[in-house]
Amino acid sequence: MSEISEPSPRTRTTLLKLRARQCRFIVSDARSEAIFCGGETQEGSSWCPWHRRLVYAKSLAGGRELSRTLA
Ligand SMILES: [Zn+2]
Image (cartoon, rainbow, N blue to C red; front, side, top):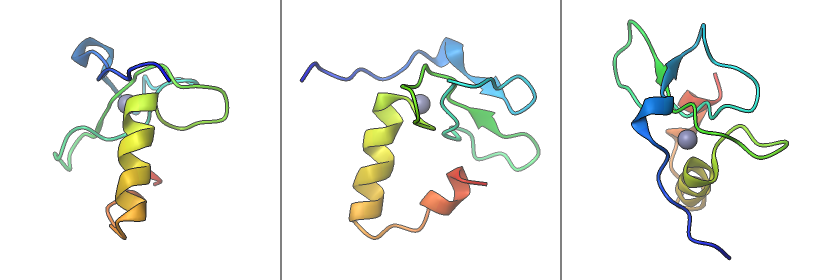
């Protein structure tokens, strides 16, 4: 397996600009405007490899923050 690196902050985007194949992990905590990671995703995934790993780690730990990213 290759090393997964954190996506560049430059790819971050808003819901209006979010496209298919862009990571929909919310990186901001502001309620007025959600900022999404925007990193490139793999086919069939909602998240870039970096956040996919993060989300899976959280779900394995029983975290409930996951629902926030699925809205
Ligand atoms: Zn991401």
